[in-house]
Length: 106
Image 1 (cartoon, rainbow, N blue to C red):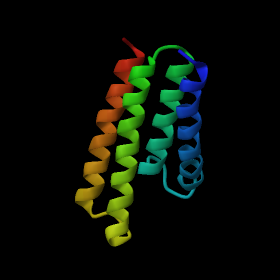
Image 2: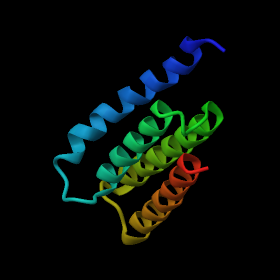
Image 3: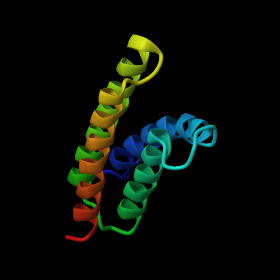
Image 4: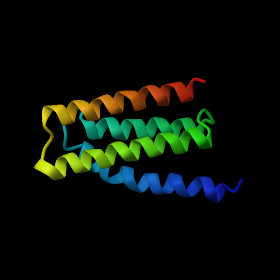
């Protein structure tokens, strides 16, 4: 399998993280954006340490992107989250976090 095939998604994901990292510093600790940044770092660390396979990586990235898109839709609708929207995003991040842990410790 080509290294380029694996490297391109990593570079793409890195371009998504950079704006999140900038935004994360503007929010209180444990904000949704900070959780997303932390989870991306955990995913990359798992890939770097060969704890996460390419298949697991693609699945985790797909799910992380889905959460990001849901967050954007929710914010676009009203400018900020309703408590229900925030809870739904937090719950999805909880599930993703558990998956990252599971993939790294298999």
